[in-house]
Length: 242
Image (cartoon, rainbow, N blue to C red; front, side):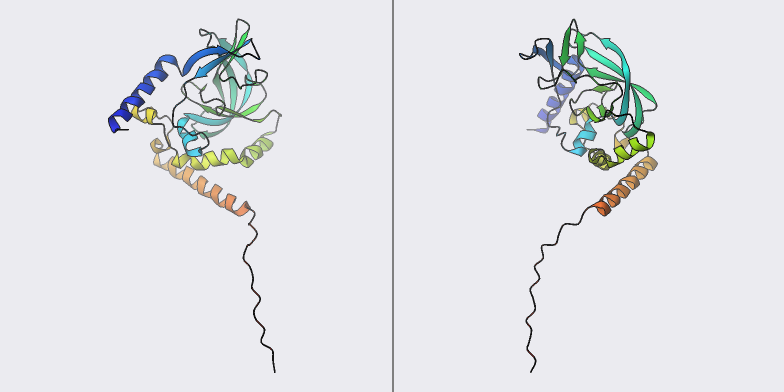
């Protein structure tokens, strides 16, 4: 693919995102006739298994506890449901205290709309009291489902217990360590829309994050269980004494 074609393709992708709001068509499941499926348009080429690409695709990445549902927004069979969330721990971005999360989908005229047919309608919507790892874009919208909201716990934990849970979560650690090496989406770079990108942070903040990452890497290396040695010891030949 030539550079010009790549640019045109990315610009087209930006236009699609802007005009349809990441939504595609709506279908209905056979097993749940009261469940509609909103097919989403996700960015091509983003591997959410890669921590560098996953954090690069998000505007904000943080841990938060859902307080309550605050509203339901009907939108032509593509509703959104809003929840208030208590921000506990920022990985990317600097959200403070309480924020509003926009979840794509929700109830409209007795039908529950979800993003993909494989979603379980029983636990699709965010659950008040539960704590999630959130990855949001724009006005705190959960775009990249199911990566957008990873359930960490449904239990009510003390502040100390919650921080212990966060610090012991390998996925959170991987994303934190990947932040300085994040891979931004081409469409975002072309549109000059890269909020909270590591490259745009003040130098002092970059150095602080890098120091924290190095400390995490050191601690991870120290806690790793050493693999058993596979070295074969060959007994030395014993020379008989006269």
